[in-house]
Amino acid sequence: DSKSVMFFLFFYLSLIILLLILSKISIQKLVNSRHFIKDQIAYFIKKVILLSLITYFFCFFSPLNSTKFILSTLAIFIIFYFTEALVIQKKINMRDLNE
Image 1: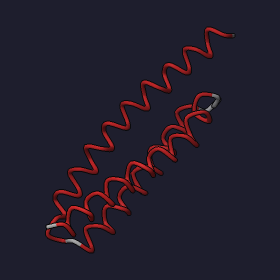
Image 2 (image 1 turned 45 degrees about the vertical axis):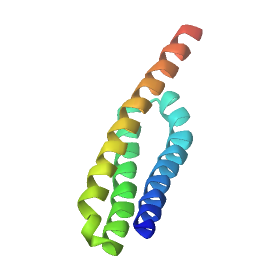
Image 3 (image 1 turned 180 degrees about the vertical axis):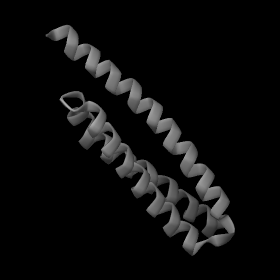
Image 4 (image 1 turned 90 degrees about the horizontal axis):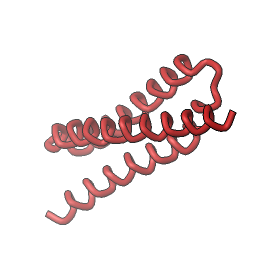
C-alpha cells in the first residue's frame, strides 16, 4: 500500500542523508589525522550507533517490516563503508603524493 512505500522511502532517505552528512564531516578529519586508527574506530562506532537508533525507531513504528529495515540498513551500511574506504584511501594517496 501507498503508506508503507512512503514509510520505506522516508527510512532509506533518512539513512542515506545521515551517512552523507557524517561522511562529509569526518572524511577530511580522518585524512588529516595523526591518530588514524583511533579516529576511524570512533567514526565507525558513531555510524553504527546512529544507524542502529534510526533502524530501531522505524522498527518500533512498523514491527511487521523490521526484518526489511534491519537488512536494508545492513546493506546500505556495507555499501557506504566500502565507498568511504575507497575515497579515504584515494585522498590519503593524493596527500602523500603532494608532500
